[in-house]
Length: 200
Ligand SMILES: Nc1ncnc2c1ncn2[C@@H]1O[C@H](COP(=O)(O)OP(=O)(O)OP(=O)(O)O)[C@@H](O)[C@H]1O
Ligand SMILES: [Mg+2]
Image 1: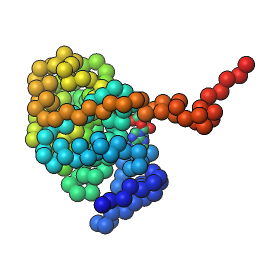
Image 2: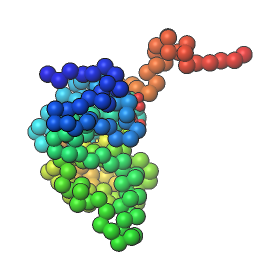
Image 3: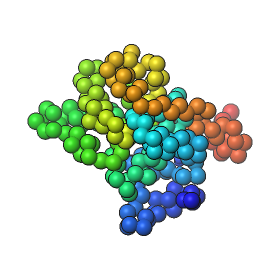
Image 4: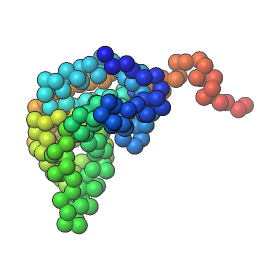
């Protein structure tokens, strides 16, 4: 059994037997195996094993969707390769590449072991964005793809369109409930004393 390391610093430096270093995408350096929701990662592993792609990880803000997907990304990185895409950035880069007559990153996306597409549905959908998302879903059809979103499965068709909803709903749905992890400290008296300042 793989042991969870205690701090992000140790985790970051951890070297795998084949000489690869585990690396989280920028902005997720604080990823800590000890903070991963074990039940969620076990279910995510099962869905990957059963190849129920795309895996749509959804739930309200701050439930740990992106960090869960990043943990899967890190796991794949050393085996088959993995690509982490922030939806907004990916759309922008794809449009920019297309304007410059370039093909963008679709060939690389097709060939990598796992694609994580983080936070679809952030920002307002339009025809361009939908075309890019649809192309990505087709390029990764039946291949490892994890998508995270605050959009409910039942609202996908309305937020995007019917073709996108159909392709996402062809896979599996993993909902993260619970509380907003970003403000968990509110329930900890020591953290409250440290973080709440009131000058009278
Ligand atoms: N494995 C982890 N290691 C370290 N911190 C974590 C981990 N999982 C969750 N967190 C903490 O919980 C917070 C919320 O997690 P995350 O950003 O994954 O939520 P989210 O569901 O993607 O939220 P949003 O919908 O707003 O994008 C993070 O900012 C981080 O501080
Ligand atoms: Mg997120």
